[in-house]
Length: 346
Ligand SMILES: NC(=O)c1ccc[n+]([C@@H]2O[C@H](COP(=O)([O-])OP(=O)(O)OC[C@H]3O[C@@H](n4cnc5c(N)ncnc54)[C@H](O)[C@@H]3O)[C@@H](O)[C@H]2O)c1
Ligand SMILES: [Zn+2]
Ligand SMILES: [Zn+2]
Image (cartoon, rainbow, N blue to C red):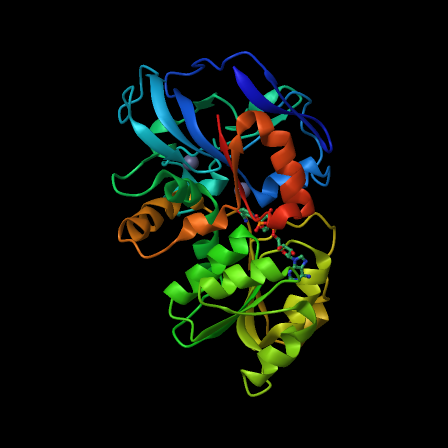
């Protein structure tokens, strides 16, 4: 089959690789109908997250059609249309029972193979999905595929970010980063009743998208003045840091009010915090972070999409064939051609 494989930082190739097969009776094989490139794929692409074996098939956002189901799979038959979250989960372990399927004891991330162990990703014609009964969600009739695809990561992660921040009705929320996940966090914060969302990014096209989804968008340099003006100088009740850099973390600290919360789904690779324990103490700060338990949000997100009115497919700036994937990564990485998110059709 054809697949987008990692070889070295900034070096991906669309190439022929062996088709996956069922390896456990709880696996299914999917034909991938749509896939996408995530901001988290960029950490691997840029070599910031290292360790991936050469030849690993990339990608953890996909939806598809079941073509074969293992003997112990109860929910899925060939022909079922399903959406996948970015990691697998058993649905029964300590963490799954506590709504944290992203930390499932048996869970694996798609698109991560290290020293020969792990799981290939979905930027391919076919993908193997372990623990398929608990991992996959049915694609609801009436939700356009491009929208449903976003439930497996971006939209669920955005809602998680807002909930993890404890966003309450009438809160002033600041969202740092207007990439796809930041935009989903804007949608999430407004759905929880935020009075106002100030979204921050240096890229004008991304700010325009944030406004389209209901935020007031500002450049980095104007963020502090805008947040203070909107809060009688106090700062934001909640800051959603959806970037994953020390600069963004430092800005989040600057913008959050005393007694406020920073919720940080952005993936960090640096060894220390951008602010000291003393600074945390000084602001009576709550800081929450981590891998989004997307599987626990997907049904809710898909139901919201089914009710209509949210044009989330606007997040996709580029639609291309799987073969063009390497170009898609380069455009997304360098934010060329106003690239906000890339959809791949195997
Ligand atoms: N926690 C999770 O489970 C989870 C899931 C998906 C993605 N993520 C992470 O979320 C982050 C965002 O993902 P994305 O797909 O939207 O990525 P992206 O790279 O498309 O977007 C990041 C945006 O942040 C902006 N930015 C950079 N520095 C900034 C600063 N100091 N202040 C404000 N904005 C700044 C950039 O211009 C860009 O628009 C990434 O770190 C990604 O790995 C986490
Ligand atoms: Zn992702
Ligand atoms: Zn589990």
